Image (cartoon, rainbow, N blue to C red; front, side, top):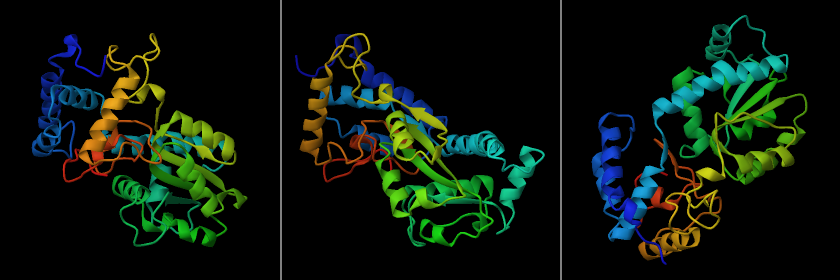
Length: 302
């Protein structure tokens, strides 16, 4: 049987959109208005397409600015201080003293924060640049303790730790390329930490093997069970989301829909995730969320 709406889920489209509208009204989900939601839902014409949209919307992992702020607090208040203590780089009596030190306009500080992309000063649309803006806003980190990737060869000797900031560690390939471009493995005497807001487990494993000199501190980790087209653990081949359709039929339905509406079926780093941040969406996520065409309106910003 081809992709279809299971009888038990006949009302799912109505239920999911009602819940999502409630989250918008209560400002639990921010950065999306009802007009944008209506335009996105209007992409889906048939009963099967609307059911597919409900499954996407119901499994969306969305991180608002408030949630991102909580992730930043987790890193700076807990995870990074713990790491620095382990490396003997924590000359502070308490967390407040550490936070105060990175907020001071002090070029002699031993830490530098770096966006994983946006090598040039005028690169303003890259994810690493967006994330470092979040850190500057939330933690009041001054320019003196940040550095652009193209200036890494100019680090003063007193810098002992580089903290790379990013929104998403997906396949790991992008950071591998970044590390080679900037010869990070050759920077002896430095503690190098990569801190994505979210990491995919396979990418973590890949970097663990290819970059043994690197410490990765993800604030949140996703795995294969978060992939939209994952199989049921109980019944191989059956789509885990509804336990009725097969993965093959569901994927085929999506591919045909994407082709028909002029959006990409996948990307080079696609992982079939449904992850979105308020002001950016990783290219590891399905294009139905962020793509746009003459025949498709996006829900999230890319």
